[in-house]
Amino acid sequence: MQPSPSAIPGVSRTLAEESLDPGIASLERSVRQRSAAGAEFDTVRRLNNDARVKAIQGFAGDEAAISAAEQARSAATTPLLNQALAAPLPPGQVALRQALGLRSKPRIDLSSVRAVVGSAIDRNTARPTV
Image 1 (cartoon, rainbow, N blue to C red):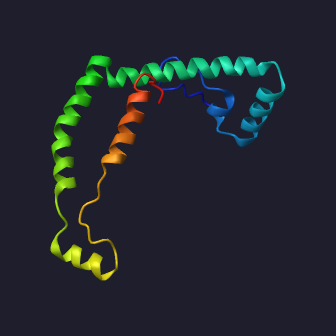
Image 2 (image 1 turned 135 degrees about the vertical axis):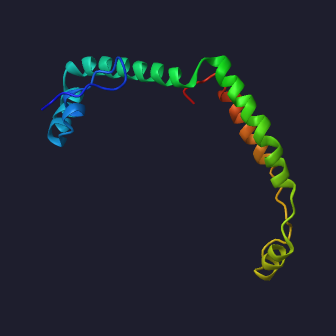
């Protein structure tokens, strides 16, 4: 077997990850669960996760770059979203909805949904993993 190191700097693959062999993967899971070596595997897993997070953060940029991108996205999409939500249904769709016995109201009030989603975003702002 020819080793192929991870493309992410700092990531050390286990034998199961390198070989992609189901038997070795099963053996590795068994060793992780039933012996003191499980702690060593956990350490390797944590170090690999840290290296992956660092690589992802390198792609996204620092907090200022992410904040600027989010503001640019909101500036570009919010007017379009508001326009789409405010637009009435075309007459043909209203007639079709009435014929099918659906509510004839052409617009759905999403303010409560927006409030719930907004509060969830606010609660999780300080939790970067979420």
